[in-house]
Image 1 (cartoon, rainbow, N blue to C red):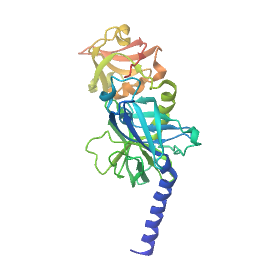
Image 2: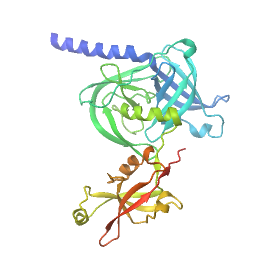
Image 3: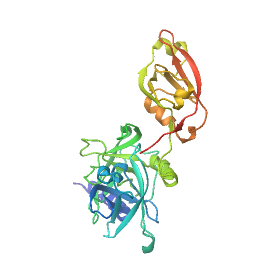
Amino acid sequence: MGATDAFLLDSYSRTVSDAVDRVGPSVASVQVGVADTGTGGGGGSGFLFTPDGYLLTNSHVARAGKAAFAAHEPRPAYRVSLADGREFQARWVGDDPDTDLAVLQIDGLSQGSLTHAPLGSSVGLKRGEIAIAIGNPLGFEHTVTSGIVSALGRSTRTSTGRLIPNVIQTDAALNPGNSGGPLLNARAEVIGVNTAIIRGAQSICFAVAIDIATWVIPQLLQHGRVRRGHLGVGGSTVPLHRRVVLAHGLAQDHGVRVLSIEHGSAADRAGLHVGDVIVGLDGVEIDSVDRLHQTLDASRIQRDCAVKLLRGTLSPQPMYFSVRPTERATG
């Protein structure tokens, strides 16, 4: 190995080590159980993102073993262990299964300000950048893997069937128990939250982009959930005939065919029919079920929205309906 290669390797090692030294103390083991019973539900990793004890992790970690504690009240008990061996009880703040994110809070103020991880940005990431994954599966020492950002703009489905956009893929292997830990850049800033919801993803890591997390966190702190609109339709993404696209000047070649309508729902009250093809909502082109889900955000709850759809089989005509989405129930 030449002197230049040795220098580069040493520089890379220092970058990883410095990032781990700065952020490692904020990375925690999260264990889930039922209060006063000793029943274990599972767990994973998480990390403190504020000095007063707010911790970010995966929804599937926070909900681990839900069946085991479903009949118990209050909510499951959380034990959070830091790398220095300190343990805390944590309380549930909120979670969003649609993005696989959750927030817990520990009472660490009695011991002074807690080390927390600085949140960066996932905007502007480039393939080839250094990526460092940290986890704390046992509570007494963290594990580290490193690599590069190998792909951007990935998407994956959660347990709810919803699509998480802009997932980060790296070749920093995700070790068992590291789900919920931070993915860092070379400046020791969090650029993603590691997730293990993709089965068979050995030797690679997928992370929910931190910009999605910074959108979710305030809603979890305020409401305990992410508020989303609900039309009350079941649908599927379908292609639009080229003739229809050209005849009506549509900008997309797919829409959402309505397969079912909940009785008494917003769509039912607005007059939508099974067989209608939704192609727009409030000026947003709807070219997939996922796009419809993403468009139905909190800003459209209980507000009159314009739905553009095609009705008819031989020569479907554009029609506009005013619909007022309700708030989607979450469990």
